[in-house]
Image 1 (cartoon, helix red, strand yellow):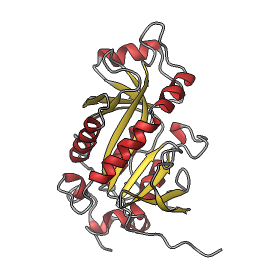
Image 2 (spheres, helix red, strand yellow):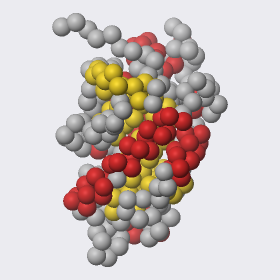
Image 3 (cartoon, helix red, strand yellow):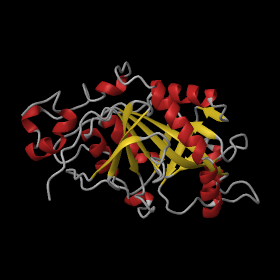
Image 4 (cartoon, one colour):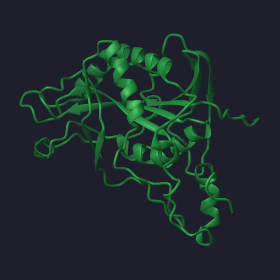
Length: 294
């Protein structure tokens, strides 16, 4: 079989549900099967043109939703998108609300993450190559602001800011856990922001989450989350999600980046050049080649 030649000029990436690329107006759709040094991504990546810009779509759980949150190969997902040239990454994420005023079918553009995962590999940098990137602000502020402005133009009920607590899953929370998260002041709860956000930062990709609220988690008596409720509310917001993505893509200036995401690794690599594991360097040359050559 002839090996596919991969494009490297796809500036916009979207990670979300498997139906997210069925957006009216997409042209020149192609599908790419990509292998990375970290294994295979969740699925083949769909590339198409939308609003005059090339966009890469990746279903986080695979088409048919067969990959659990813990089993998502986030390193392969982010690496594959980086390989295609992605610099701006929109994450569509179903989430639960931890506050009364954040209602099911609302949109949330969080600005913080609290990591409660246990079994995931959160970094590309292991095996003889150490990097410490800044993660105080886990989301790209410029991208967040653009998404929020587009939400307002579409008159979507949207909350700008808030903390996303990321749990391991795949089970929903206990009532005790949900109560503690509320006491800590968290706003929404989900299972996929970590390690995606951390890896995107290490890959110097601008990253933002579009949280689609599907439920009240389990803290609200008589409104405890169920899988049926999540799917029902998610499906009810499909068209709004597609309209939002089209408007964000239309208004996203891919010709410039004036945020700190673009050079997050510039001063973050701590390993002395002569101590760098050469095999690890080859795996990460895509990420660090502009700073270090061996």
